[in-house]
Amino acid sequence: MRRDRWAAVVLTAVGVVLLAACAALGAPPGERVFYVSAAGDDTRRGTSPDEAWRTLDRASAAVLLPGERLLLEGGSRFTGRLLIDAADAGDPDSPLVIGSYGQGRAVIEGHADSAVAVVDTAGVEIADLVVVGPGTVQPGSAGIRFFSELAEDGRLGHAVVERVEASGFVHGIEVGSSRAGTGFRDVRIADSVVHGNRDAGLAVYGPEFDAADPRFAHEAVTVSGVTAHDNAGDAANLTRNTGSGIALGSVRGGTVTRSVAHDNGGSGGAGEGPVGIWTYDSTGVVIEHSLSYRNRTAKLADGGGFGLDQNTADSVLQYNLSYDNHGPGYLVYTGRDNDAHTGSTVRFNVSSGDARRWSVYGGITVLGRVDDVRIYQNTVVMAPQASDPSSALRLGPGITAVEARNNLLVSDAAGPLVLAESGFDRGAVALDGNAYVADGVDWSLIWGPQEYSSLGEWSAGTGQEPGGSGLDTDPLLPGPLVGLEATVPGDAAALAGFAPGADSPLRGAGLDLTDLLAPGTALSDLAGAPVRVGAPDIGALQAQPG
Image (cartoon, rainbow, N blue to C red):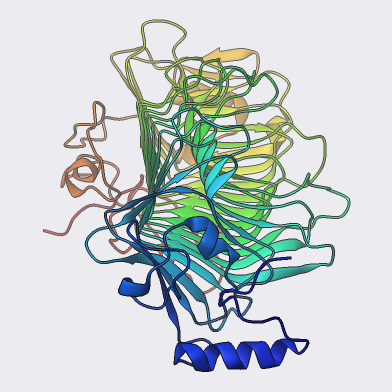
């Protein structure tokens, strides 16, 4: 049982205690501000900078009501853990706010399981803090943790993290649940940096997915303006992937936008690997307007830029830039033998120099028992590879109802333009209106057991690109197409190299997209320019006016 914050005489009526304490503090419930300072004293009231508490233990022992604020002294360092539990907060419409006061941000050096833990309660905002690990990564630790283990179904509303830096933990920031149907809703993680953590920069997760009874722990999750870098992975973990930047699992309705993942992975020990930004066991997730580059894998699996992984439904990768990743730029994949992975869309993305380690991947890769995949208006450029070169588009067995339209696929001294593995159902894939460009390498496309050396030969032999809809001529793009140095989403200088010039054969050569879109949909390209649905330019960017 936690002690009352004001150390008042214990009375039998809890309501009388609270009212008396509020009167003593001079402010009604929900309007009080409490302070913690390195020069404070835990015997004080905590209600002003001059009356500040000194430790996180004292702040954790207080009952913090909805609408109140707990502020830590900016520039000071606090050791231990701040715990917010079911006795605190609880009202999504009147959140408890935790942050800093004075000059700069407060630093919490978290020991044991976390620096800040929010457990089984709603309505909490955490902002303007730096959380760091103790030097050695503690098992199961998180810089900031929201966790629910409630026994009854129901999601806790309003979980917010803003302008936070988290490093030195297993997860920098995490939102988790032990039960499907019980977790958090209206989650917002924004304008934060997560780096130097072991397993992931940002992880949202729930219990194991059940395809026979699909349920999700969390709902309405938004990640915006988050940078995840140098989260290396765990060489000792031989059971699952580690080293991802941003990973969303067990989410119904989520968005990742304006975020960056770079230089993650490379130290994981499992046979599977990490991905820069990805989702799994989720439905209705959109990953957009983001950047993922130089992510790595210690093995030959994964290490890509973006992914829609196992048991993901009705989700989208759009308006993203991926480059120089070990694995695919964009992965649609499941290793599960069920029908849960369906309704994926990959559109208006650029992949440059991805899939650098192993030809099982392409710039865009679709593998496993996935159904209803729409891949259109993407630009993929494979960089020169001296050995085991990768394809621009990789298709594997098990896939069904895959439509690829108006994509620009370029092999720059790399592997085949398309590699469709033997054993896949050829009738399950339709390629139409795409451009296939070989630069510095012979034109090559592998379709099942047969390799084709020209677009016409492949089209005639397979019925793909019917009516001569495909192109195989120089796209006349200004470049550079490889060797990118973009560090922010939507980098105008990097994207300009992929926009077709005045004489480009890509202009107006795309096929109508109407049947792939919801009625009334208006499209824009990767740079935000409007797209002519009836006759767009091929690729992720449309020609600039003038």
